[in-house]
Length: 245
Image (cartoon, rainbow, N blue to C red):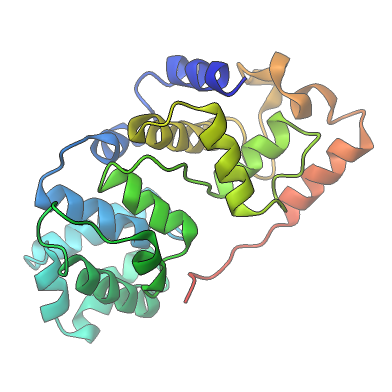
């Protein structure tokens, strides 16, 4: 089922819209140092905001010639906060960027990579962010479980409440049912985000217009099944979290 779901999403979002260019960069293998930098800091900046605001921050950094990990560490904290401000939570995110930059500088070549444990020890790096860095920066084959993933799976396979399921259990389920390849895991994550933005939205999902309607348990049953309705209630009530500390 997962492979078929991946193929259908992949076929529909052949250009990974919206934010096509951003996703193309993230999924790309063998990135340049500048591309790795952009993706790595993007995983921090995008927390609790949208790509338009991240793009504003990237433009701010470029305007000040801050586009490498050493330059992030060299710039004064107050100045970095100003540059990061469009992404929200700018004081925290400025700290997080310096913490992540310090870790990346320990691995100047691709011969050795930071471990997941080291990434999780960085301020502002939770499980989703750590796995995103491993997949999109270092082509490590590991599933990424984000808010969009939980919401989508909770609706598509509505007999399970993926919203409350442990991260590692969902991750193992994806690992067991998709090809163990960094591009597949990264692309699946990107496709689910695209689908969440286009159809499987938080409060007002566009079920009747969704190309997955006939196979989606929530889309088929949410108006008549009280248990499915409870899942929607949980999704709607789920509040935003501040960036992890």
